[in-house]
Length: 357
Image 1: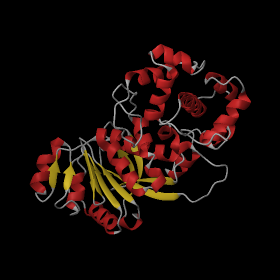
Image 2: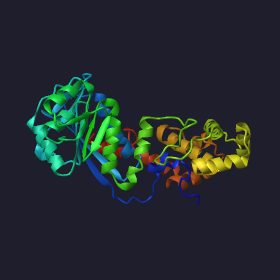
Image 3: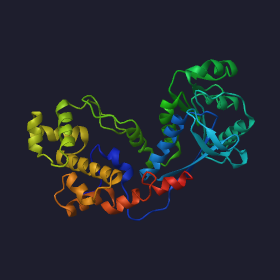
Image 4: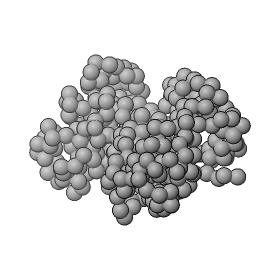
């Protein structure tokens, strides 16, 4: 039995490990988005996609999303694309988080229904949040008094004039005391991830870095550390970075470890020590986990046969691939594909149902 991931790659795969028996003990988190006329569609899609990713990677938390507006029906976004919504009714607001979505073209004005909905959520220990210039509505409800607030620069003057007790700060997003704000569409992801980390189960908190990696991919550089919450004391040395690049470029026909060591100009023993020190695994083990990570991506994102996937990731026999994949992910390849690709909506019926589609 090989067990689950050992190397730094576990942070890319931690959310995909499964067991064949379902516990049925997911925590359901209800998130409401209040859409203002001409709301930022980019900000909303970024926020909702982070929640969708949280559902797709098999976390213990299921995010159920609802959209509301002042009048209900279709709400026009900033680029003219309308979205459907329910009419905002304070009696039906019983959510773990309520997010007001503003935008560059949103006209700010006090609204009693929004104010009551936010106060009700905050009073029930829920999280309230404002995207772009929608911090105005949190301030109008008295929920940002003497607190830092991230707001789009075009709206800071208005905020300071109407709500001098609120501290507008030069930050992309803020999150404290169950109040969250962000300055624009580009910072909506970080704000929503902070909300997810606060509301999800302890295990799911480890998945936040993976969701960020999905939306903000960054390749390993010479002075970088592996993705994940652990910050290493020293930068990754160049020979190790080159060795990892060689492995990434030779997935289908894996190289021998001695050959990799020769390419980077170090002995096999030196290479093994560096892999163990910086990536928490021997070179052979890291290489295997890298290939199985690629196999997982191919299974989820393509229609290639599982035999083709096995060959494309360097396994000469399907039974060997089957065993190794099941050891690391808890399910055989076919069952894994069935679980993640059971619908036309991004491979997950689970999110489609949760979002009310």
